[in-house]
Length: 237
Image (cartoon, rainbow, N blue to C red; front, side, top):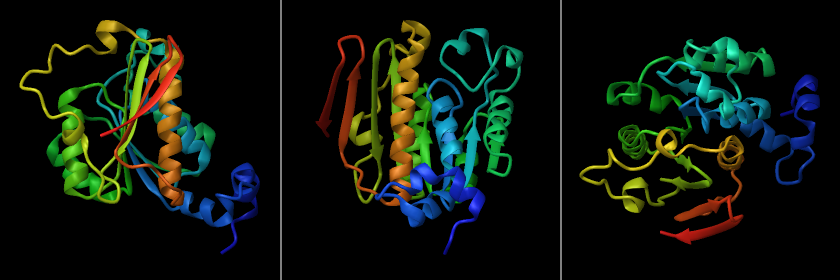
């Protein structure tokens, strides 16, 4: 099936790639992705999935924009401080593509909500920084058999992987739940340079697009990035 002329022109630089083509773009445009978190990681993920023409974009976030978010959460602006992140995220998506389908959920992700919305999406993305939510996202992805693109950042370091894809392992296989993870470091305690969020978030968005197209995605491998010393390694798990 041909792609409309407007869409062909908009996405031509993707379509021209041998690995994508018209068929791959059609797959992107029929894929529904749920991004949990519209902060440091969620911002570039939302930005590039919307720009790539993803079929439907779901965004879950209960938080409001704060001034200290702006060094890395690039879809939000000064005028958004004090307002729900999903509102500025929605405005950003509309500015990129007025006809792009999206749904925002201005609430904390709980099990009941996960059970109601995870079945509606093809791919889940964990862009959160809360350990309780991470395990909920993981367990719900396993429950509903959804591939999960996972990433995290702090200071100069980041990591990403794809869980629960074609029988691959999940978060609990890699990081068994600690009895007390409340004291583990986060961006709030150690800080983070903004471009690192862009690096990891964009890599996560790329994995989402590869999943959507059906391109090879390695299983049971964790990519670790030390941007201070510019070390990139991948480890099996």
